[in-house]
Length: 418
Ligand SMILES: *Cc1c(COP(=O)(O)O)cnc(C)c1O
Image (cartoon, rainbow, N blue to C red; front, side, top):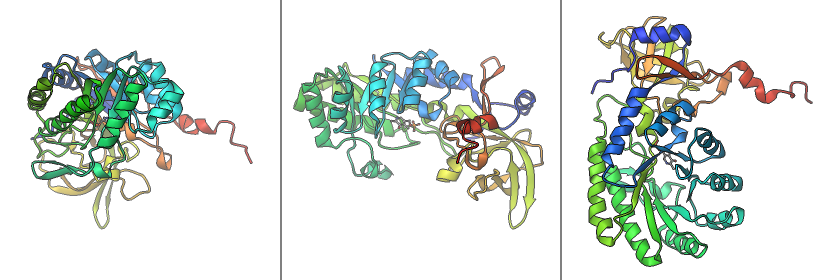
């Protein structure tokens, strides 16, 4: 697979003429086409809905595009709930899949009609005390152990802080029923960034069997099963992307085999994808401002880990294209660095790239999800602007860059203290 940017050098220069680097840019066309494909892949399920994980890209213009494509939102904090509400998402288009949840967030989620997904059995009493148990409620399941597909271990639910044990989810359903809940959902997130068409079908089988058992054990009406996030994207160019049509068909087969015979053929399938919905449709665009030749070769850019934390935090690979040099040989091995006083502030380490000159524009790929969103202000670095590339090729700023006044705003009134 070749990774081709969705903007050309000419387009990038045109945009930079108006909005200086660094910035994140999103491809509206790609986002819409992908969202439609997801919907099509699950069109066999009458109640299917994608609740976009707001944490991946908490930007109103992006949420509106997804809303137009029929998506809801998945939130886990007050600010995310408020953003969803301000963007016009209404009951039942908001899922509240939080953990370690403060009381007032349960209260607000309930007030705006979000579907509450309880992370723990002890949250039942808190919810009851704070706002009462809503008619529709969801519980998050954690089977423990490891999660494997074929023989490869994909993740370790046993080490994850989320969800309830098998015994707890049964007890939780019984208690919630006693307290008046009528419609039940089951949620689980067992592996992150899976680049495999087998993850969702395998997870679906686990949750569908659980649903059949819980229905028998507790007599509750299960109305939806939330497969959550975790469908990934190939960050490296050598990997095949997931085929969402194959994934949808795999889940359909499990549905026909397990849920339909158990009289659960009316269950709605929900997803809470973040990365799969947005990652490939975002670029971080940055300009080369330095080259440095010491014990290694360095290329310094005007973005830093404050704009994209994944490489520093996880050692994550993000592909880089030097605009205008797409066809030149990658015969220079360099580290691409930002300006933080942290040696992990590197977008690439020992990366073969074409010969780079000062002033070159770099596209850092797959930053549409968990990119801008994880931004922070270390070293007094400011968050960048976000730009939306429209389907007709025009572009619009959808969030301005932070200014030093924003950075100082929380200090207003504190300059002369002590
Ligand atoms: C992070 C998260 C998601 C989205 O995960 P992706 O890997 O971006 O698909 C969905 N649901 C919950 C509860 C999450 O915490």
